[in-house]
Length: 189
Length: 82
Image (cartoon, rainbow over all chains, first blue to last red; front, side):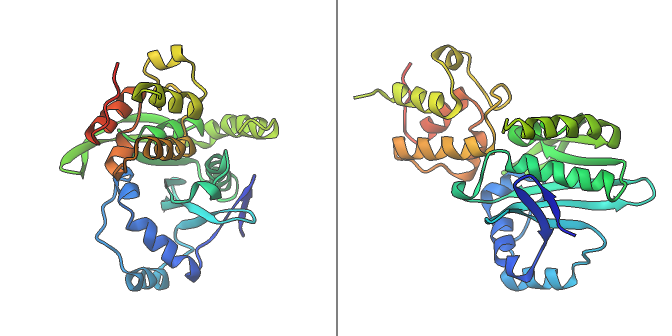
């Protein structure tokens, strides 16, 4: 099922999304903000990834503005069904005209609500580059708590970078989600 | 004609709704609530348009505070005089 939250919908990746995903993975700005590193990816390679991707093993969805354009992807990977944990990732690539205030907040809270209350996961964790202040601030707004610094964990632009580990438990989420619903209901975007 | 600093301050004031007193405190991504990814896009667009520069991806990432923005512009040949 699609995940409906506020003004966005989280939907499955379709073949027609492949050029968008390819552009995102090849974008130097996005690469600079994420922990991974990638060789340039061709459309053919992107297509082969799509053909082999098991949509039941991990959750990778497109963030789509209702009646609008895709603005990014958000993912749960490394799902551990015994310990009820999963790793959170997100990437955004959109023109300003396709964005609206609070769109990522809708996407993140929609995914977390699905993770905790549909998949019955108990802890969602992630990592973010220490210098990516916008992502760190956004994660904290959504209720993720920073747990520590992993030193020199990623090599970027000629230097090793620290990575911050963060997480949110289902118990944390109840409070964050109530705050989110109140803010959005009051039009505070 | 506005000085570079007046133009620079006006951009920050407009994008983040900041006062001159706020600007004097070196506002940053971590201290300004309204500084999110959308505001960052607007800030970059305004700086590029007003100062006729093209920021590279790393410079956009480095653009994390009022003072950091001055350093980014200086690397592009634009001096924000004090």
